[in-house]
Amino acid sequence: MAEQATTFTPTELMACVAARLLADKRSVLVGTGLPVIAAVLAQRTHAPHLLIIFEAGGIGPLVPVIPISVGQSPTFYHASAASSMHDVLSACQAGYVDYGFLGAAMIDTYGNINTTVIGDWARPTVRLPGSGGANDVGSLCPRTIIILRQDKRRFVEKVDFITTPGYLDGPGARERAGLPEDTGPYRVITQLGVYGFAEPTKRLKLVALHPGVTVDDVQANSSFEVLVAEDVATTEPPTAMERRLLREIDPAGIVIGK
Amino acid sequence: MSIEILQEGSGELIGWHDPDENRRWVLENKTRDLRDKRTTVKEAVATFVRDGDFIAFGGFGHVRVPMSAVYEIIRQRKRNLVMAGKTGVHDADLLIAAGCVNKIDVAYAFGHELRGLSPASRRAAESGQCQVIGEISNAGYQWRFLAAMMGVPFIPARTMLGSDTLKHSPCKVVTDPWSGKPVCLVPAAYPDVALFHVPRCDRYGNAQIDGILVEDFELCRASRRVIITAEEVVEHEVIWEEPCRTAIPFYVVDAVCEVPFGAHPTHMPYAYFFDEEHIAEWLDVSQTPEGAEAYFEKYVFGVPDFEAYLERVGGVRKLNYLKQVEQFKAPMKVPWSKGK
Image (tube, rainbow over all chains, first blue to last red; front, side, top):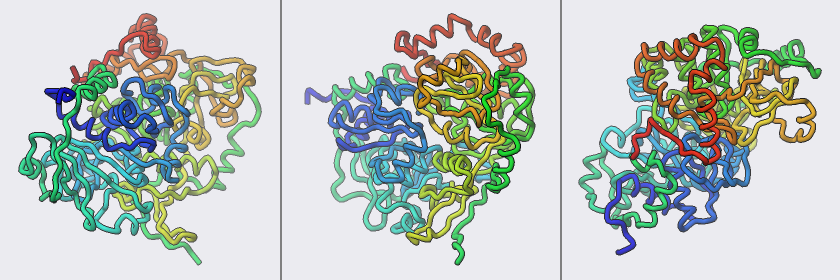
C-alpha cells in the first residue's frame, strides 16, 4: 500500500479512473480540461502508444502541459501532424478514432448529454455553449467516455435538450437515426463512481464505486433510480506516482486544483 | 425517383445561395490577377464589413483570432451582424457585448473554454438581446463551409442524427440512395465576409499559417469577402520559397493588413501566448453591462488604433513576456483560475 497516496481529491481520482480506461495503441479524441489530463496521464503510464487527437487539428502530440484552448500550440507539440478540423473529424467519421472524451452539464439515463440550454430553447433560463465538437464525438466514436460531477440537477431522467446523442430513447435508436453502428457512450465517470450501460436496455448502470462511497450516496445524487450491477467494484485510489504526474501535466492546478 | 426527406431542422438557413447564383457573384466580384491589396484595418473594415452581414472569423476559440479587426468593427459601430458561432469565443463575446452582433448561429459560443462561461454574451442570449438562430456541431459548421468551398449545395454527414442539435439546425435528413440509411445533409454556408489573422502574407493575399489550420482552409474559400491581417506582410518571393505552406490563396482575398500582435489577447502559435491577465480583466468587468461599456471606452473607443491599444495593455514589456511564455521561458499567469 506504500504506493498509494494517503489523500487525494475527487478531481484527481476522476482523472486517474478516466486514464485507466484508455487502452494502449488506441486513439482518443480529447478536449481541454480533465479529458486531456486523463489522456496524457494514460500516455505517461500504461499507454505510451496512445494516439491523442484534438478536434482543431493536433494529431499525435506529446502534450507538455495542459492546454487552455483546444487549438493552442501544446495540442500539436512534438506531434505527427498539425492538421485541420476537417481532417480530424473526417477521420472520426471514417472510423480511425476509438475513444471520445466529453464533459457534460447534464446527462440522462440513456447517456444523452445536454450542454446547450437549461429550460426552454427559445428563451433559456441558462444558456450554455452548445455542441462544439461534442455532438460529433458522441455521434461518431465507438466508445465515448463522459466525465462530470453528479448531483440531482445534473443526473436527470431526461435532459432538456439532447446536444449530444447517447442511446437516445433506448436500444436500436442510434442505428434507426442513422448514426454509425457500434458507437455510443461507454462509461460515465463522476466523483462518486463509474457507470456503464445495461444490456439490452442501454440504461445507465453503476459498475464501480469510489472508495468510501455507498450506493445510497449515488441514489441521493441522482434524480432517477440508477441501476446497480450485481458485482459493483471499488475503484483503486490514485497512486503517489499518478498524483505526481497529474501535477506535472497541470502545474498551475487549473483543472486538478478544482 | 425522388429522395425522401425524413426530417427537417428548424434552424434559420443563413448564408446559403443557389450554387449558380454564387458562381455568378464570384465571376462578377472576385479578381484573378496578382494585385496589391495592402490597406489599413480601418479601411478594410469600412469597405468590406457592412451592417447586417453574415460574418465569420478564422482561428479557433482563443487561438489566432483577428482581434485588431474585431476591435475596429466595434469602433466603427457596425450593427446587426449575424455571426457564425463556429467556436466563437472571445470575438463573439466582445461583438455581442458591444451590440455589433445581434444574431448568432451556434456550434459553440457563450463560453471561454477552460476559463468558464462568458458573462456578457450569456446575458445577451438569456435576455433575447442576441438571438440564437440555430444550433449545429463543429463538424456540421465546418462541412457547411466545405460545401460552399466546393460549390455544391450540401455535404452528407453521419453526425448530429437523432439529436436536438440537428432539430434546431438548418440541416435535413434523407435516405442515402446507396446504403438505404438515414444521412444528414448540411447546407453550404457562404459568409458575406470572413476575417483571418496569419503569421505571414504577401501583398496579394497569399497567406501562410504555422500550426493547425482549424477550418481556415475551407472558410476562406467559402466566404465572399476575405480580410487578412498578418503579423508580417512579406515579399511574394518568400511565398515562392515554400508555396506548399500557402493555406489561403490570393484570389479569395480582398484586403491585406500588416498588424503585429494582431491576435492579442488571443494566442498566436509559435509566436505569443494568450494574455490571460487581459482576458481575466474582461471576464471580470463584463459581469455587468456598465463594466463592459467601460472596457470598450478604455480599450476601443478610447484609443485611435491597435498600436495605441497595445501600448495601453502593457506595451513592449507585456508583449515580450507573452513571447517568452510561448517559448516556455516564462511561467504563464492564469488569474481566472481557482486552482491552487
